[in-house]
Image (tube, rainbow, N blue to C red; front, side):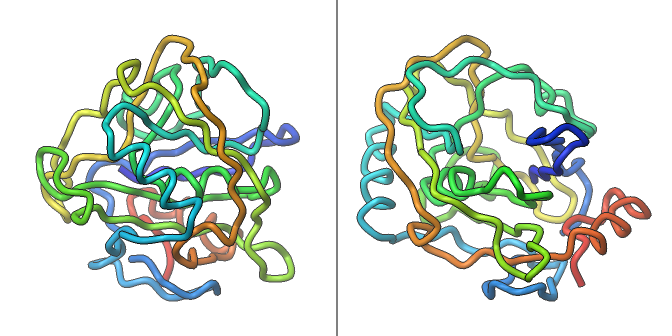
Length: 230
């Protein structure tokens, strides 16, 4: 359910690790290295935002579009890519284009700087099927920079045709119960229907920050202990 991005050894490369089903993990609203209650690691996804967020929300509300956040601007076509993935499920290893119906999650990916060493995140509906948007839950935490800041930059959110995508199948998490992720994939190239610029201030919540080295040690000793923040 949870996606964990870690910078790889090659410059700009990213290693993707999805939280294995059965791991535990809370969000913290302050932009600081913070404590997290594993029993309530997720919080309600924002229901309101600024003009950019609202524009994205209105697009996905038609059910005709999905969103893909990126630091690369000016693309006219997205092509499937093989993630460097170390999770237990096969879905998250699919060579694909990944997209979401949640504008907050899309903006978070758009503003995530290429220098970000890790991005802990999740967005889902409780239950075995997608519900009302107000039911969505979210968790965002960036590995902080050396001076304790969020590693974010301006980016782009691409608007894509939803008919090209398939939602990740629902499954049961032993802590949360049945869940349905706000995540879709396409294994074929997808044309870009629109591009909307996104800035860190467009994110309608303040993501948590965590210490890269500390979380790395905890994840190594307990791979199922997401989000590894105390």
